[in-house]
Image (cartoon, rainbow, N blue to C red; front, side, top):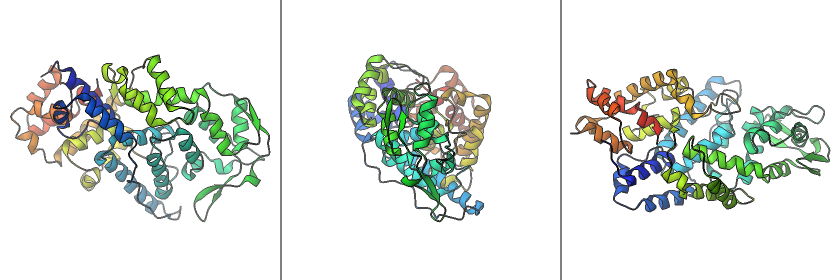
Length: 421
């Protein structure tokens, strides 16, 4: 089953790393073309203007727990549907990266309108300037409420948002001092919640008076000034290189040459698309092996593409959101402000068991005639999944299965389908 085709391996890597595996049998289409044409198409899609944004949900009474939860549930399925059907899956990858980075949970912000507005910001600004994205998200109502910044006032500064802004959102740990956090908290006073509109707004008159000193700069700073100071630090460029590398290459440590080229390309405004283009064109991306583990949501999206279903269409038969929650990852519900755990966490015994259970349900309610009627089912699965090869062990497990359904399930939970090369 294994092939020595370098071209197939490279195409499989591009599809796995940038497109959740690509469309069924897409790998065969690209095998007939130069690898460079797939790279060009992928890079071009990064800057595609996003027209798919979340629906406008009702701003329900916070006491209406059931109504709010139903709307959040609908938004979770909408996100999964977009990740599955988007013609620009690399933008969906970036959206998911920023959702994980600026982690905000509907378990506390039980409001689909606010969570949907935040998701729209992730999408519209996915590949643009990180300076702009940071400015926009700093004033995001869901994030402000999630980190209790409405409680931040000049008499008693709350450091939550200031600390996470520096540590988790822009700079990374070790690149700021406690004094910077305290001064940043003062800059971020002045935000107040408007209950009638269920949003947060900034009132300069309510801000703690300056001057403020942050990372060696002293002035009467506004919240926008604060994000600009942070994004201008060299640590932010390093932070973005690491985030993009982990998102598209998994555990592979990229070369210093590639990292420096990415930082130069992103420039002072930290243009994400330009840095990502350098990464995708690099030898690190195309020629180096890396263990990229599909998270539960990424696995679900890849499975939906392979089986040919849209998640919300199966909602009445399979509670996909609940199943993903059992696996430890579902849209809009990161476990904490640090986001989801690292990729290797998705190989635990508990996740493996729940993945198997969900695979069985999804296969049960999908049309798998394409697989059942195939002369060589393992080859059919290999091509439909866009994989480079299947191990002898996986082939054996699929061929020894008692039914086509069980054989397909074995493929969906195989190491090759879960961990990219």
